[in-house]
Length: 271
Image (cartoon, rainbow, N blue to C red):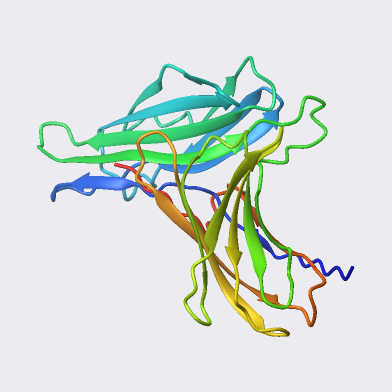
């Protein structure tokens, strides 16, 4: 059997959620900016934020709200909001370290704030700037981050192949829909069903009636959501070449959910 294995690793992610602003005109006011959420060991995270320079910000009162949503397989919990209030002369706290009971769990961290100018009907409200992260391994030897979604092209023959999505069962996102389509001829993959093991839920789509020794460009997409956020879609484009005969081969694309604040792909927005 011929076997060809190709990897395309796409750094995605942070699932950083863009802020939603409600603004009025008036004196110059700004909002604190969420800068990072960093796992520091197997049961703790540190949230960091920054204030605007005093020469720019004329806010008299700033309030910050931080909420942690905890996920560990089928278990979930919401922690009470950590709230801070600052005056224009007292912006001394710029981080929060939170300890949890679970080891190597997922946390969806949401940061919001509002700034006001005293005696003036001016405000700036920033809500739901969120990101998904994960605490370190039990040994604290590594902090690998969220699990990866794998897209695998398999059973490649002279006239057909199958595209499969391997969705990690520990990933707290809801998978809403999957679609695989050939850009060459518009053919849509036919679902062959789904299966589940201890690590993944696997959904497969088959393409048939293809030409031998032909390179086909696949548009593989899926949509996902978390909490009450609107569904977002990830699209991956890659190539699969049919074989000369009925011998089978394989290729694979690995979509890595690497959630940071340097967004390469995967934007999720919430209101």
